[in-house]
Image (cartoon, rainbow, N blue to C red):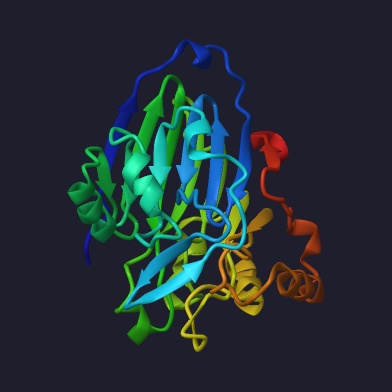
Length: 288
């Protein structure tokens, strides 16, 4: 059995980090793109900044049209310390981002995506296999990004699609290495390996769930629909969860209304936070 590895990314500490209280926030930009702030760190996930009517290429001649606009433009982002990229699909790292994102921003992602990013000229790539960890330090703030199991659809279809990872983000400080635990599902279905997550990483404070029930060719579902999301909630058992990645592209076939119905049927509605594009959720470690 392969032993998980870990490596360290040390970021320069800015003056804005001094005496910063240990609080955090999540801003929903659209699709799987969120901005996460905690203790002077700013993380961007799955950057997609295309607009309504733009198309992405998903491989094998398949395309999808964007139905929404991002809440923030790429050029208006705050300074980004780290990008967490679940996989290399254009609805998660579009052509505009590939061309215009700063090549020096560190990116934590899969091995396959890291190879593609190298060809594009990105110089700070951090490939992670499942259970590998990137330790990020900035001033007194620490972040552990650990790759979680992910599978982009049924086994045979997943082999034809890019490898995908979920992420566990453990925020803390040098004196308290875990103050807040956040799970990001990535574009995955619920499968056996997911069951190992709560064994290794219990007590999840917040889960960001990639929904949408994405269907390729209108036939094969490759991301969680509403019923799968309830299964994920029962497995991971987060204190709170935010649905994302559900209404932005025409390949998403399971709308947010389906998720709301299933969540209410399961009696889990008190655990869900719904964000519109541009909304921000603020959190504190003392919420536990």
